[in-house]
Image (cartoon, rainbow, N blue to C red; front, side, top):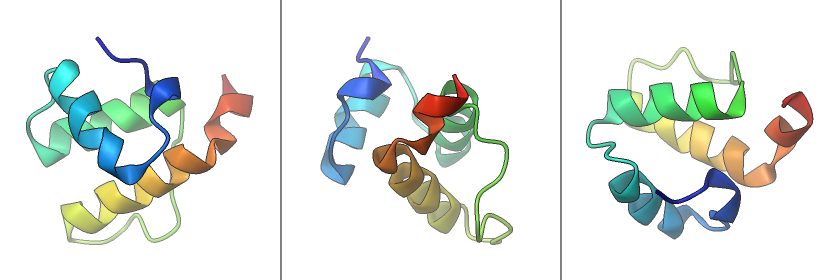
Length: 69
């Protein structure tokens, strides 16, 4: 199982998701929100789950969530 702290680029998320058994966009979104403690994101009300996932991944890479832990 890969640790979220080791993900440094958007491209590395695919390997992270595979190693953690996350297959659907919903699983990925829920996992990132749980793992980072992020409760809301700017633009997170989008109907497009791919956009929501991209915003969460970008937020995760910036690392602001580390201070929430």
